Length: 352
Ligand code: SF4
Image (cartoon, rainbow, N blue to C red; front, side, top):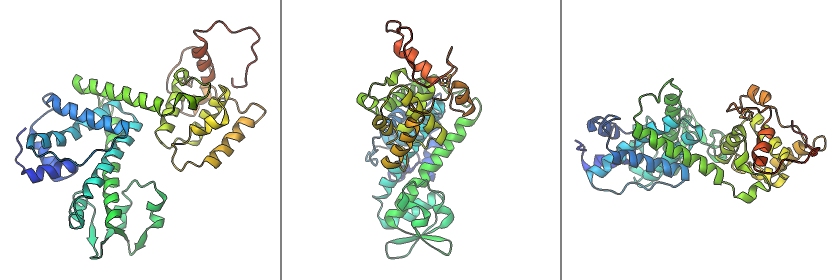
């Protein structure tokens, strides 16, 4: 894995995947998808496994050029594996991992080194000599900030520039790096047949990471969070909504509504339903409880769960479940399939 770069340049490349040094390592390696060493695929898998489990990556400390080059090459390999999986949830976790990693690495650069790293990402940061930097407004808007304190309305903006502390600039660079990675993954995976020529080794790694992602979403809640409900019996549409909510994705109003009324229809209590929304952005226990109470109390037993036809019109149906007209029907069939036949005239809850 010979590289023409110095050890210092290689270390820089291993920290900043968007840098010209990192691009040079990839170019000089001469590897193709078919010839990339297994160690690179393993390193990419480890990177994605950290993303899925929420484990922060430590700034690289290795000295050996081969180890550093492998770390650099793991990034494009991880992009290929992620795009083969094609799940938004993974894109968000992977880009979050990289945003935090870049931000952490910059924290070790010292104030003087930050503008150089910013420039490699096309962000112009002008030191003001007092620990603060002037950043062009257009560059600030490239971030993916979600915290209220980081929104533009809470920044010092003047004459088309934002004044940021070194800490603020460090987070901006990480956020821009993360956002650009996420958008690039979305773009790659939206190309028709993008996964067609990906070698088997990468596809096998993708399968493992995909399974890990699904398992993580299910274990996000303890079994007791579901009360008497059986999450393993959820239909695919509701499993997806549950997984998206657990991952902090911004699920639309219709999806949140459908999931809440489904949970109510299968007998989950209000506290447990509210708990399902705890990871959503800007979660408010009070507001969520009020909304859930409105849904479950309506007409005595609550709103009916939308039928599969309705779920299709909402673009929330994700599979073609045989002989199913309503997600609640799917759930009950799964729960009771190994149980004795239910007694005739069993009182039915509203739902379908
Ligand atoms: S067919 Fe019905 S139960 Fe199955 S995923 Fe679609 S909406 Fe859900």
